[in-house]
Structures are given as structure tokens and as C-alpha cells.
Length: 363
Ligand SMILES: CC(C)(COP(=O)(O)OP(=O)(O)OC[C@H]1O[C@@H](n2cnc3c(N)ncnc32)[C@H](O)[C@@H]1OP(=O)(O)O)[C@@H](O)C(=O)NCCC(=O)NCCS
Image (cartoon, rainbow, N blue to C red; front, side, top):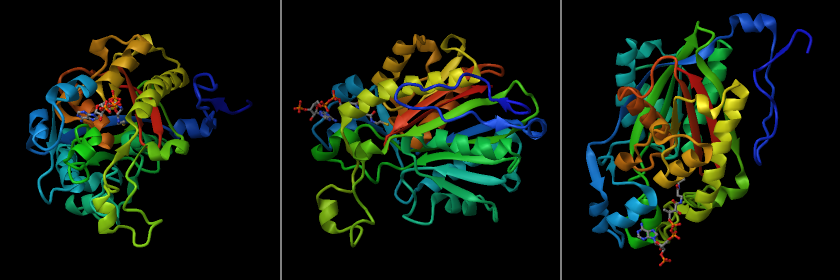
């Protein structure tokens, strides 16, 4: 390879996905490149707790059915007028306080959400305004349950190259305004919840710490297996009362197919990043999976031989908060002492698109 050095780890196809690499680094670039560390995290969930029993009053469902199929016991719903940027603002303020930083020290905002405050502009600019910051870039990411890992991959590239030093990475979702509270919408209405969490990311001087590998994937052949058909700019106008009455603005999901793909893609994504980083599943101290479904997380853990106490699960309290689910789980796991400095932490996600990905971080 002459003066170039390969990124650690073998380069080979994993499952149906092919790893496109390696990243080539010059020795000169190596000297100025730093890994990305998590400086702090913060979360916020709306006050309103909605139990499975409350949902029984809106649709033909039961607490037992929801718990058995998903592990969910309750979720949060945002108040009228409370948007993703409002929740993200509070989560950001908490993370800034934990880091001892001011919002003015942020260089870039990356916001992952599938439930933006408005059709356009993106939630990022509303968050920026609420934080009282101006003139820093706001990038909105539309990759659903994998959104936080897509955002991490972008943030990591920005930080490694030295383009930005303080990146705010946000996952925020308001699902309660998109679900339909009737038996027609029950397959998805019981699964999704609202919430926000953020991470402040920056370069670390310690060459052994930080994001060791992050990889994301997508397969658009499955786009309609978990989607909202409307509003849709392929239609003129992009939304009508008929579309709303027909339920086209609510999430539609082929649940069994989603489940089947999730339980293969999530472990494959984790193995891929571990291989890239030169580590094994056995070396992981903690795994933060996307909280899609308790049974999916259990299947991933069982398939990889990860013990229960190394697979962090909080879906019982929040349901599936899509892009916010990984950072909410990460924040709570840290708060509970489940992740300590020096730990090897794995992340894995799967969701609508289909999209999926993994990351491994030396804390
Ligand atoms: C959604 C999921 C829980 C459904 O479980 P399942 O065992 O596949 O159930 P099915 O869809 O086959 O439905 C079984 C029955 O329950 C019914 N049902 C669906 N939703 C229900 C609900 N909320 N309450 C009660 N019954 C429900 C179905 O209508 C069906 O009834 P039928 O047998 O009379 O036709 C499961 O497929 C799943 O977890 N999929 C992955 C979902 C996911 O994680 N999505 C997010 C990915 S990021």
C-alpha cells in the first residue's frame, strides 16, 4: 500500500451487504485526524405517560397482546403544540450543562427525525433558533430508526477531518400526531412513542478511545414495507382529505417482514463494525440496540450470544421512538452506570427504508 495505511480490520462482505472500503489515510492526515468521542448526552421525554390500558380504550387491543408481542408497557405522547425541536431543545440544554458548554460553542447541528416539525424547512433550523444560535449548519437526516447512526457516521467524518469540533447529534420524534387511534391503525399505534435525546460529539486526543467504526446500509427495494404513503409530492396536491380518510398518512407496516429482516440485519451490522475495529462480540461490555421490539432485541442477543445484562433495553417505558431510541437508551444506560470509561460499546439499528447500521465505540 506504499505510504497509505488501511483502516483496521478485514474487508469482506457481511451477509447480503457489502462493506465498501477501506478508507485510505495518508501519514500526514493521520497526524491531524482524531477519533470522535461522546462528550455528553441528554434526553427529554414528554410528561404524558400512555399505558397499554389507555390504548385499550381507543382500539381493539390488549395490554397482554402488546406486552407479549413487543415488550412495551407504556410510551410518552407530546402535548398539543410540542414538537420535535421543543423536546430536542430541552435534551440539548441538559447535554450542554453536563458538558459545561454553551450552545454558542456548537459548530454544527445534525438532526435525525422522521417526524419533522414542518414539511420544510427541517427541524434543525427550528432547534437552532430555539437554542439562540445563528450561522452554524443544520443538517436534517431522514433515515428513520437508523437515523442516529447515519448521523453519527456523518458527524464522525466531520470531526475526523477537523471540519467541525463540536457537533450536536439529535434524535427526536413525535409519533403521537401521526398514528391513528383506531383498530385500523393498531398494528403501529401501539408500538411508537415520542421523545428526544442528543449527544455532543468532538475529537479526542486519546488514540485508543472514541468511535472505532460506524457503517450504515440501505435497501430501497423494501421502501413500502414500513412507510407513510402520504403526504407525497408525487401526488397533486400532495395531501387531500380523501388520503387522510383512507389512512394514507398513518404508518403502514408489513410487521412480519420487518421482524424477519431486523433479526438478521441488526446482528450482521454489529459483527461488521466489530470486524472493522478488530474486536469480537465477546469483548463488548454493552450493546445499545435500536428499541424496535423486545423480541427483536432478544433474538439479536441470543443469535450473537450476548448475555441479557449486556443488552440495554428500555422499550417497556418508551415504545419505539425511532431516531430517538438509541440516544435515549444510551443516555439512560450511562445514567444507570451501565457504561463506564474504557468500555467497548456496540450500537445496532434497523428500520424503515429498509435502513440499518452499526457502530462500535471505546468509551
Ligand atoms: C407488529 C408485530 C408485533 C405483530 O406481531 P405478529 O405476531 O407478526 O402479528 P400479526 O401481524 O401476524 O397479527 C396477529 C394478529 O394480531 C392482530 N393485531 C395486530 N395488531 C394488534 C394490536 N395492536 N392489538 C391486538 N391485535 C393486533 C392482527 O390483526 C392479527 O389478527 P388475526 O390473526 O385475526 O389476523 C410483529 O410483526 C413485529 O414486532 N414486527 C416488527 C415491528 C417493528 O419492530 N417495527 C419497527 C421496526 S423499526
